[in-house]
Image (cartoon, rainbow, N blue to C red; front, side, top):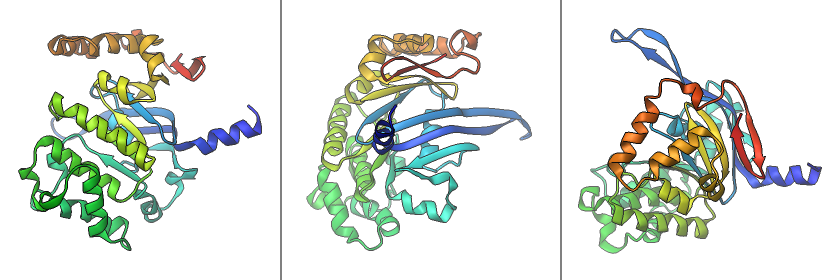
Length: 307
């Protein structure tokens, strides 16, 4: 790679993880530590400006933990996380707050994400007071709510007066009101009815185009991933086992775990999908799916597999 190519690669990367590790203690029934579990195990990941990178895998694979590490909501045990070329893990905690406005999250459950005693407008204004204290919080909140389709007297209603899809729109408005560059969408559709999921997906895509957003889209719904994601990373037991253009990963999965995951998740019968995922989770020989040690190797342009 030439110096020019290397410079272009760096400038196109907005968020980058290098060797990120996050462990949690395992405790017995008496609260005593009996070991640790590596939720994130040495992950390298670069997210490009303006793209949607999907992160998929079974429950417990480490997807949400990695997302929280990227946002500095969880502090990695080791490794680095950089935003726009700045190593956040090297900054004092007080200095990291300067970047919180640029990095936001949309959680899975919209109802628990909102203060039930505040109106939609108040919920959206709340983070602005902390992250954008010089801004006209009310005007910014009204603008953000209008962008997601919540307008007029509706902004003065409390969360219980809205449907699940409308509540998720309020959560999205709260995230975009501070004008971030990077948003982690952590299973943002899984609590919604199928009929509403398509509407919220379209909204996320529209906002991405209009506001120049970069997404990390954490999901187990591969039909949505296929529609929304530029690239897809497959995570298994804390490691990225495959990464590449979404169409290519779906059409030509190279890792055994990816093939089993696609086979389970893309079946039309939800009950059968659950059974297949349970069989993957209960597999007696993890080595059949993952390499011990190993590193991501490029098997096609932009397509990497754990070897």
